[in-house]
Length: 255
Image (tube, rainbow, N blue to C red):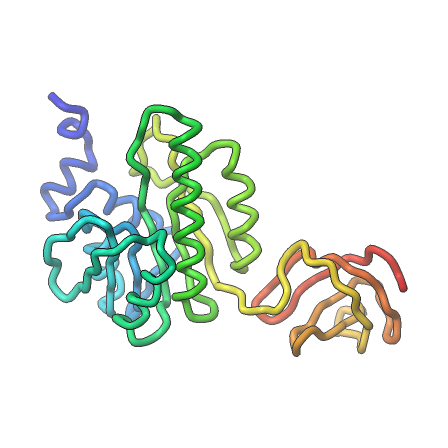
């Protein structure tokens, strides 16, 4: 008997009408992190055969759009687009279909495995980067992003890049993932729309003092809190953290 036929989640998917066992990964992730809420507009990148689309529609009840190179069999009240998620123009097709910005972008896409791990990992990271680019174009401010990635030596750098764009980011492996699998999921909540990113180096002038007693500088109307700084001081700083409404920086040198 094939492994899938013995698999608990495979059997459950067959019994409960989901197109793939991966449906339970999204259900479990959403139960823990509340990525998708009622009424959300959801985009699923790399959506075939449609298990995540079924769950997204069940969870949100709102507009759901799926994209894949392969055709996706009809799912009631779900729009599907046959297109390449690695091509930038695909995001424009999705935006036209949505008619607005998305609340959530999810991606369970995986490369066709070659058996050469370094190659498979690199292709997985490339897919995840395409998904991140699309998410930044499709999401409304404070929108959520969920993407599958294969672990490997390129994973930490990708995780760091996601952390630059979202307020809360965490890697997570749901129970429905097979124990032997190298896959993990990056859960990213609250897309940032600030003019600065973690790691940016800026020259600032401290304009005021916040409630904490730390200095505050403004960048395009966005507050940067600099610990221990005083009004009137000019300094070169590095952005250490970014929240939806303000950021934190450490002093590199005073000017």
